Structures are given as C-alpha cells and as structure tokens.
Length: 74
Image (cartoon, rainbow, N blue to C red; front, side, top):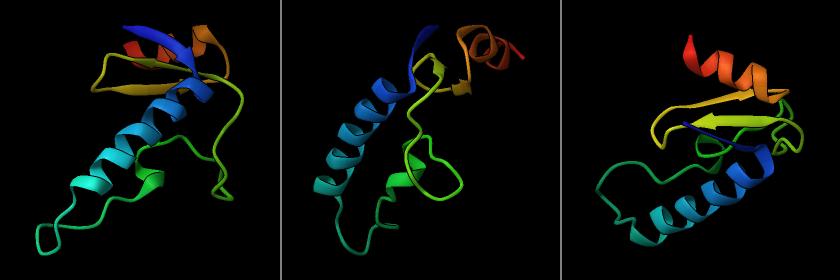
C-alpha cells in the first residue's frame, strides 16, 4: 500500500485517462469518463486536499494519512 496526496493521485489518474482515450475505439464499450478516474468534489472539481491510500487497484481517500489508511484497511 502507498499513501500519496490526492493531487498526485489525480495527476497520475489523468495520465491513465488520457491513455484510455487514445486507445478508445468506437463500438467497443463506453467512452472513458474523467471523473471515474479521479477524486472529485460534489460540484465536479477535482479535490486538492487530502490523501489517497492505494495498492494500484483499490483507492481510498481520507482527509489525513491516518484516515486514508483506516479506510483502506476496512
């Protein structure tokens, strides 16, 4: 498990999103949707405060490192 800032996570997620868009082929499923890759506020803006605990497959947000780790382990 790795703990990173939500800004770093969203930066990495945008890279994965851009790759998915470039590899997208019409007729083969839905078009990638950026908010499915990033952590966002209710108004749609990307979060700028907090931390994400991740193992590459599971991602859990917390306002601090302890909360992110606790969410990941539960």
